[in-house]
Image 1 (cartoon, one colour):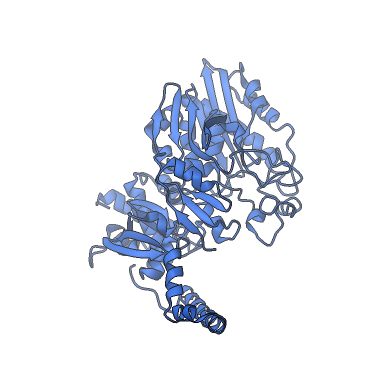
Image 2: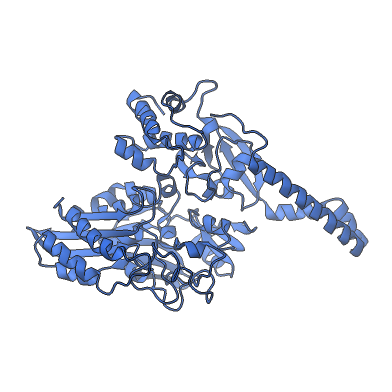
Length: 326
Length: 214
């Protein structure tokens, strides 16, 4: 690993001052960044350790649940408020990584993790995300894990997080601190599609810091489910995952939120499928129809065409679990 | 469990070779430098001041407690907790498997919580208490989980075992050892290529059901 400077600021202002210099990166849990530094995918001159900022709290507010950016994935997943108010988030977190990694990884860091596309990690391969303009190794390569939605000719990588899929479904809001103060953006608009700039994963500016997220209160707690399909039963990235949240009144769906993981460069919200579910009875037929709508516009590559069948099947299955049909 | 590794381990060989090459480069650049630099700087180089200044700039002070023993040290920020334990504190019980956070062989406890030491920078555990496999036993008396792994043949080659045991202890402490399914899920961060999984699950259930304090 290339030598670098290390600083441990104690205030948010000091962090914001420190990160405003080129070659500087923030480190929190380090589970992704240290990995990337060992492999030479990234080589910062300076690391700013933000673990001493007071951003670990999980608190109920008047309108929802506030979770600090440094709250550990394990702590959030086991937190009573989270389990009671937003069980979908707990389920999504527990589906990710391993207990050891969840004990290190933070909420903010989870949002900022890079893709696990093998061409991004392999320095001998072209990758527009790692080295803009070099090409995409995955496009004509072994693209089994790759996107079926929202890809561009420059990049077909997917976002690897489970937590983010849950947060996208729950309409979370990201709270970001900058030198000019705080701003809030909807979670679904935090990550971006690759377009012509796959090197940019999200809309966080270089001199900004994620300080927390807020999840508005909802009526989904009773009927939520996170279903992750992967190559082994645990400790693997998703081939396809679905976060399903339903508000059911007397057998009729009043409101539905759906998001998918493993299919796009960002957590993929299924707005059209959600609309199709509203007013429908809880039934496998309703779920199958929504799943078919969800897959409209999907495009497969040489090795990931199986996702065109796996994705709708996973949506139906997640909805069956969320609604209590199984 | 706590036995030291043979000094011929590949990692150690690598270190020695690197050190030799580094020394050679250092000496050869020093000779060139002496030939070209003014006298005061040559004296500084002869006394090793430049090395000391560079070292002070590169290394960060670190205070940690490992298995109950306090250490004051100075480390380069790029040194992982795993390398620090193995190469600077000679605690080679913690194993380097993949070195990329994918196998769990390097699992240790930081302030009582299990983490992956290969993805933890040493400088980031300043002020914390580390427990490694060497810190589980009480003198000659093995920890109940170590006993259980022996009784149930919870290993074949043994390389993943220190990580498995550290994880297994945490699994019970966290309250995630209530069924075979739960144990398998919460032990999924520790890979065993020999496939000793059924026996590992048995060992954990044995300790859990025995009600011993872990």
